[in-house]
Amino acid sequence: MKLLIFILVPFFIGCIPSPDLSLYQSLKEPKISNKPSMKVMTIELIGDPDKTAGEAFGRLFKMKFKLKNDNLKKAWPRARWPKPFETPKNDYVGIFALPVSNEVETIPANADNPEPKIQLVNWEYGDVAEILHIGSYEKEAPTVEKLKLFIAADGYEISGAHEEEYLKGPGMFGKGNPDEYQTILRYQVRKKEKK
Figure 1 (cartoon, helix red, strand yellow):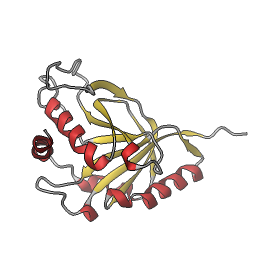
Figure 2 (figure 1 turned 90 degrees about the vertical axis):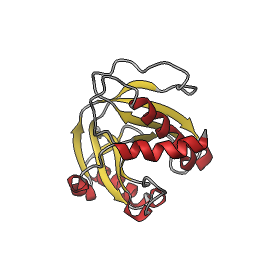
Figure 3 (figure 1 turned 120 degrees about the vertical axis):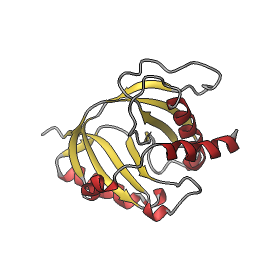
């Protein structure tokens, strides 16, 4: 099973057109914007993300190609991380997601959807703070800190889990160059109440 996932994930990711990375360069500096809700397929796994992400995205991409009425072609994978960064890697909770079009009403139920089940949900957003991180996932901490300082300085507070949208990551044949990964780091935010 692990070998099949190792083979399938890069294949499925390779079938999705790469994003135009130039469109995201303005996020090198943090920004607050309003983002609409998005329909996604999700799967929640616990454990070291270096091990769980491949399984999660492999299953999500495999399911995406089974959907008959999904016309959303540009769907970058993403994940929400509800536990703090200090959590030991083996205890991380990853809610992995892949956007689908609003026309998708159900997910096929069959033997290819074992536990934990893939679910179809809406991710609510509203006001979000975002920044583009360039580099390996292990080196995100300073970028996250920069985003958190920006949020506080702009009179906001975090109101949702840490989220990552993966624009450029491991390549089709291997992990690629981690120094060139591009990831949008995102938090839902709300204005602080005046005291």
